Length: 279
Image (cartoon, rainbow, N blue to C red; front, side, top):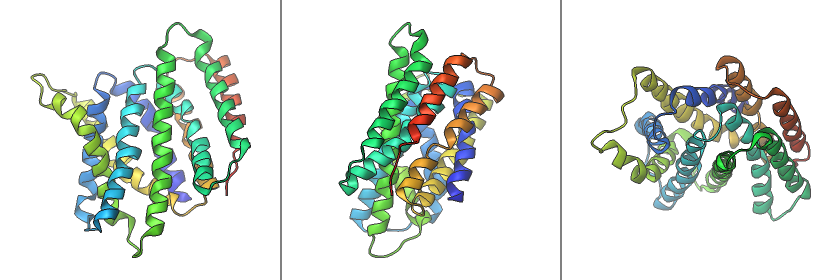
């Protein structure tokens, strides 16, 4: 559990860093660079695995990291970073629902919680709705949530089924490589264009930190920690980064917000987590 707590604290700063320093860069390119750096971190530890295991790890990484990053980073075009952090509230609910689906048990409490969380998001963002942009941003965050929730559960299941126990750091390169491969068709044309993305020195430093630490080390620690807790604990701990991320974005990065609607919506979203149940 300590792994998940530490990672949540680190990730709390990522929302604000992305929103403040990387808004002018292509989301696909940013995710591609981050996952490329992440894969490089684990390349020295990589070991050969059976092809079916390797393909499974590659596919999980493609979903949990590749498609997740595309949706998550694109959402910053439509939402402030504290809103992105808050709307990830659906992740623990999705973890619970997907775990119910995997065990073929349906808990209506979890569905009710999901509906309540959507209502809280509506209070926060749609109180001042002037275009479809906030809805697009919200839906992108939910795609990101679904990919991340499905990926961590799939990784738990795959590693538990291995006939021969294998340390996480020996296989995690294949996860990052899967995410990197998914974003390559979207990012490579930008990198090879006549005017490729040209991050400033500060943006380069932020990208390096996000790639090596927030993506590389933290994804590894998160998935490793996810194997050591119950599905119910995993669902709840997916929510720890939300209040931390919102607080960091509002206090440290000085983002403007309507405090009354933010409080009302956050109260609804927080209440949504109470019914979430899982073993």
